[in-house]
Image (tube, rainbow, N blue to C red; front, side):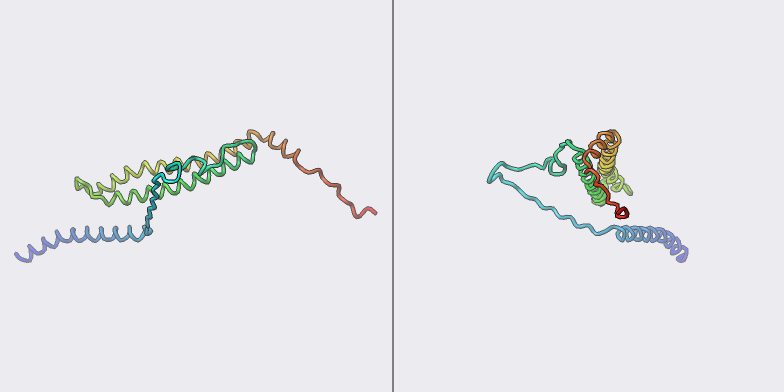
Length: 176
């Protein structure tokens, strides 16, 4: 009888041990794939001494002045916009993953299995959509310049040909 009780207890522990082993495996696997992340926050406080108060960043900090007086300036603006949008897209996507990881560590108040991960995913999904929108903005900036070249090809070529130096006469050394 004692052997039978011990066997039934071992069966119950068998599943508990399997769950613990799987959890340890998944936890160990997850930590080995995730790169170590260090977050540094620098906060500068301006008390208004010495001038006009706190300054806010503006569009000129990321983009050149929207002066479209030449094809080169259109190209420069589109390339700068594309580069800024790609960089921001990567930063926001990384922020989304970090946010998801941080929020997944918060325990679920109702104690549901994977409840905190589901809630974290719902929140991070909105930030990931922002990253996707920034990536699309980069694509559209590149497409903008391509369409500009197609639509105004005639005008661009007319100015290019006029701007070329006149061709110098070629000396024929064989003719003496």
